[in-house]
Every structure is written in C-alpha cells, then in structure tokens.
Length: 163
Image (tube, rainbow, N blue to C red; front, side, top):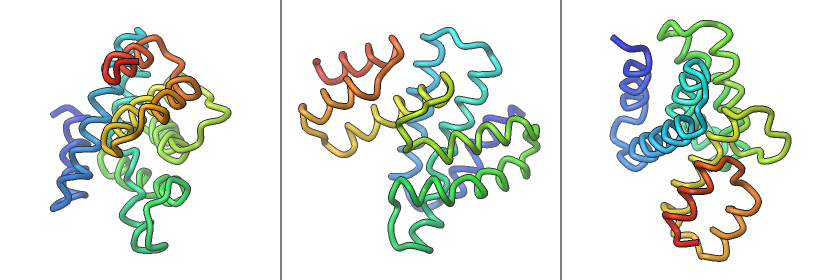
C-alpha cells in the first residue's frame, strides 16, 4: 500500500474522535497538493509536501496537554518529535523524516522560508485557516500580500475570496 495512504490513515487514527482536526489536515493536504502540482514541483518534493501537509498539526495534542493551548509556537515546538516518531514507525526514509519534521516545526514561522515545500505548506494552511477562522476581508488581503508567493496559491486565494 502507498506510504502516503498509510500516513493519512495513521493521522486519522491519531485524531480519532476529532472530526474538526481530521478535516483540517485533509483540506490542507488537498490544497498543498493542488498548489504543488500547479507549481510543477518534482515528484520527491511533492511527496515531502504531501507528507508535511498531513502531519503539519501533529503537535497540537501534546501542546494542549502540556501548555493548555494549541498556539502555533507550541505546535512547532512539540510537532517535530511527534512527527519523527510517526514517520519512523511508518518506514519513511531518514532524510525525508528530517525535512518533513522541519516543515512541521516551521509552518507557523513566516520569515526565512527556505524552500518551495515550506512556502506551499504555509499557503495551504492559510487558505484553510482563513476560511475556518471566518477571517475578515482585510485579514485575507493582508495574508495575500504578505504570505502568498506562488502563482497557484495566489490564484486560489484570489478566487476563493474574490480579491
């Protein structure tokens, strides 16, 4: 069976009983894949983007237990090790685990974005969060100007929010 399918199933189990979080990462994955394909990334980069999109919020459960919140910084702090454990258990390659875990631990850090994979993950998460948070048009416009860099991500944001 496909390793990404196994990862998606593992994440559904990880968030068992939490339909909101399951739906969130499924949507982020779908947008990330769509943006990546629109940007014509190579197959290995697409694999990394898909895996990171599926696991990007894996630090939330531990953050809530440890700190009583799910702030972006706490997610980043706790998500890296949790992602490493899960990816290792599913047989991911060590180099891939390092990059995916790095992306998980930086998906709320919007400066010094070091690759197209991180840029796409951030854009996909923003597309979903802007909707789920019922963001104002002003907040959407600010995000569009400051966050979105890929043509595919910009297009989706423009079309989704009538910018």
